Length: 428
Image (cartoon, helix red, strand yellow):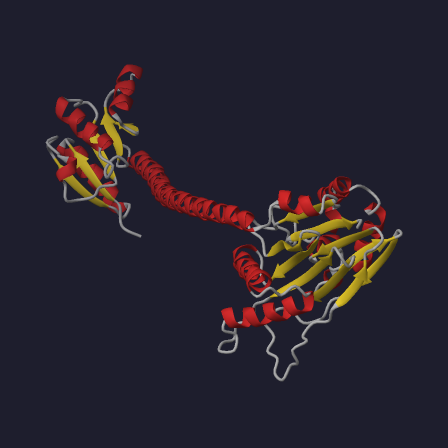
């Protein structure tokens, strides 16, 4: 701890000697100056206390005190006035000039010692508070700087997020344009609906439709529902590959049998993603129907996707193959990769193609999210309603999904997966 320094100013010779003796006895350093021409700002010494002649309140003394009060370095120097006067008016004048305490002549050493200690302690406390305030201000400045940096980062992130969202929203318009038009589907399947809800802005699910006119009185309808690897942007890229391969297989290669279409799709994904030469194992689940209007026959093949249909109010379930389109490396595999199923639709038949997204919404147990039985029960309850009423019932079920059943990691849409259900009724 440093020794306090005391400056004795404009005192009489006797007073200066007595004050200096008392200060020295207290263990402090005492300096004496017999002039008021003291420029605090120019002083090389740092004083903790000044004792001045309170009866010489001249302009020079006032100037010195004003300098001390205006200087951030010296404003905490304690000031004790030595005076002969104790009138209220005189003491008030001293307080106004910035004096902290006073002693009267003749000087009593014990009183002087007590006043010096009191003022030094008071000013030391104020210096400590000043230091704490300075540290607090520094921390506040640092916090303000951090706040400004965070605000700038937040603005930058928000701008980047807006740009990304705008870009993905534009991609959604492209994906929507890729999907078959509702008017085209309704012209061939008037009793139908498609429930399509992406988990994110764009979807890894997609649907595809074609009408192959073989004669004026004979045509085939080909329908596909796909669920690609990934969600959002990666899934959307895969869905565009799926759409392109379906167009090539059905329209360019003129392949109409569902099992053959899936086989060609599998080879196409392998070729486009060069899966023979790398570790890419992306692909898609796909269900594919061909409706032969003339033969009143529906043919189905599924790659890890299934089909449900109703006839005479009875539910029938056809399970697709366990292999998906692309992804898995297969050697020495026969040409018939997928099994073909045929259904007689000479009587009214209601058909459901779907990905597993809607079923995942119903799953409460994370280990068994795809709740097939529960989904089938829901279809039994709604299948006898007209198509648009069924669509509304399915949408309402999603909207009223109990919060207690929602997994904690759902996104803003409240969906855990992309949702796609395609219903159509055949009355040939």
